[in-house]
Amino acid sequence: MKALLVEDDASIALVVETVLVREGWSVRHVADGASALEGDEAPDLLVTDLNLPGARNGLEIAHLLRERRPQMAVVLMSGDYEESDMAPQGMAVLPKPFRKAGLLAAIAQATEQVRDQA
Image 1 (cartoon, rainbow, N blue to C red):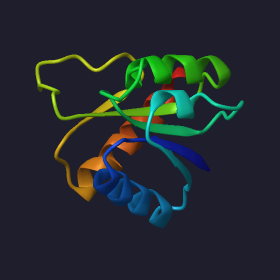
Image 2: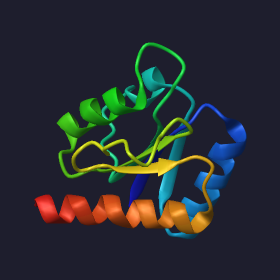
Image 3: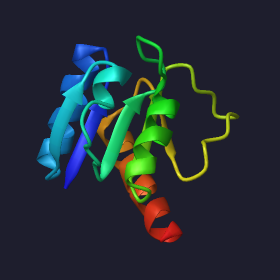
Image 4: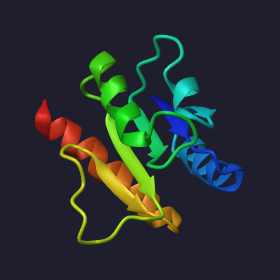
């Protein structure tokens, strides 16, 4: 299973990557949206910060990558997320800061949503 991690904060990226690898994911980490869109990669899972440096945000990255792989699970991480905010359809939102259990729950939710859409 391939995961793409898009996070500009190195400490958060290290934590998320470590958890994903321990859960059996093959992870490619990039720090910005432009790098996430390079090549023709179509990961099974996208874990991305909502607010990224550069011209594209995490939601835009998710939509563009889903054009390549419609069944890609998506977890959007955000320090600005409010419980009252609606998660985009078919995507899980993970408020920062988070714990390992929260990350794993968001990944499970995102993959379940993709399965339900299939």
